[in-house]
Length: 364
Image 1 (cartoon, rainbow, N blue to C red):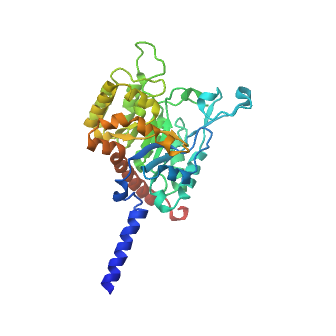
Image 2: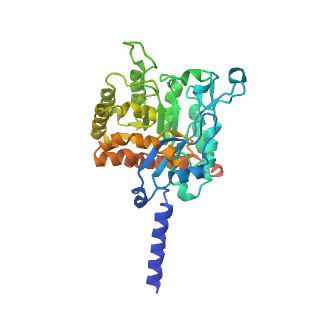
Image 3: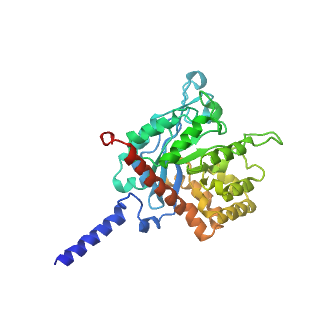
């Protein structure tokens, strides 16, 4: 009788793990294999800090998306009556009024995450974004968020240094790849184990013929200065009007093949990036060939902002379908799912260990 009861208890425990996740909070392997992708780049809120209820978003994910790197937007669009009158802009291209850094986004994301049941929390990896990367105190903000909300965050970002139409609108000092505040921030991320998702255009918008893409060299130097920090370069530096530079894929290959840059990963996200990659059979093949040579260095993300329907949320994933079709099955699996799990599981482990060592019991 005892043997029967033991077997029944074991079966019940196994069923619970399959349904609710492992003790470590990871998506179970059996369940994870059924999902089409994990999303390394998702904004729950928009430029006026409005967005999708997180419980509704879990329903939007459904059985299609396994895990999601979750963050808001660290910038608030000002509603300047002198600029747009009664029209309330919700996007940075709708007004000439400035953007400003909005630190409350981190508390909002943490609170939304904590409102979920454990099984749903296991599907998210929240990120800290509410800091000013020109401020030497940015790293202190990240530390403060970690100690205020232990057990929540796995990374920092998406944060912006150079971004078309955005950087010039941000009030205050312009962000720079050479600013020591950014180095201090990335040093701290490396110490803790936080993943850093950084947006930096590979070139200036509308460059003059022959103009040097100086940001390439500055980015390389930044990445080299922080070998202990796992860095994901958003969109491979592409944007709405920032087109691939000459030898774009060659630049990526040289970075990915360098032993000194083994900490660097590339994020394939945003419909504005996809338009360059899937623009022709030649661009699809060239990009697929690069990914097939370095399948462990690319992650897929949607870069969707506060979607309200699954069809809208999955739109970017469908746009990238021609690229996925030319990847080897193993490479496709890594880009869509495996690399996310590997990187974010390790980030979870390291950040929780840092919290355990650095947060006093009274503040947990």
